[in-house]
Image (cartoon, rainbow, N blue to C red; front, side, top):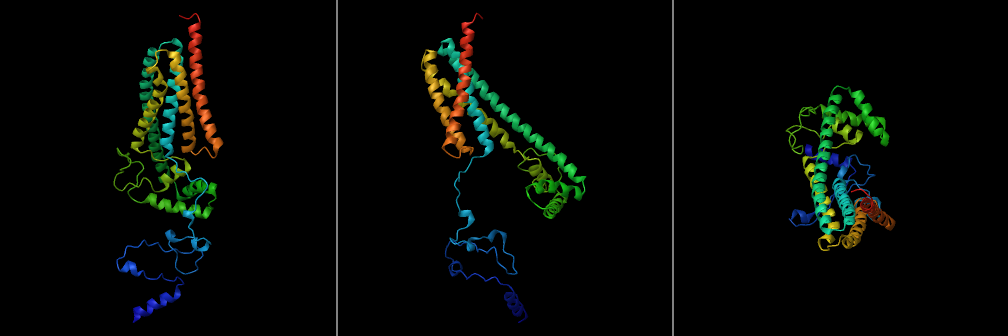
Length: 331
């Protein structure tokens, strides 16, 4: 009797109305159940769960804000991958095209093919190694800064950490009391056993040693939001090298294609200019799309024309230089 009385008293205090029992679920019927929705202005003594708070009950159409669509709902690709593709393709379309245009002034397609292939293979390998080394340097710099920041956090008092957290959050509108609460919460996580920023990084950063909480606490917070730095996984090094190298190789083979079929370099150059110009226009348009730079039709036009202009200028400069040298007295 006592427990029944306590349950009835607790039910009388709260103002949250329980949902009706789903008899289909009890009977084992496979029905798609939606999670309960709590109104944002509920005045009951029970606190609504964070994952179930929504203002759809206050909207006339009853639609959740997650289901509302904006004017531009493009899903962009990983910016690091996009950056590597742009670097590889833009250099591949520009440098070999300029080289073949310059060698075309000598008149022999065979010479253009041999020189172009040599530059293409060497350039692809060089670009891939450059992407690998750049990502490796970025990863090593992050690891150094993580050890340095952790050491500074460990020798500083909570007051200094509160000031640093407020310097980061205050600039985006968070008040001082909330910043202090965040700093204390992160400080407790940092002070827990198992986190040691001085521990040497394992061979694969995506499989940290047991107990190492490298993504929690003040150290990663200050690095990510204070310094704008994030961990570079090891696989990123190889993805970057492969993406840049293959982009350069695929982009560079396009200007060379006409020279395989035409013996006169000048004739092949004309077709190469047309093909490469079209590809540069397409590449500029796609680049404006995947990077989100184009907001309207003029954005696509500018991306296409500017990309083609860069490649055309480089090719014209190389061709003009070769003609000038050939026409001079330099032997």
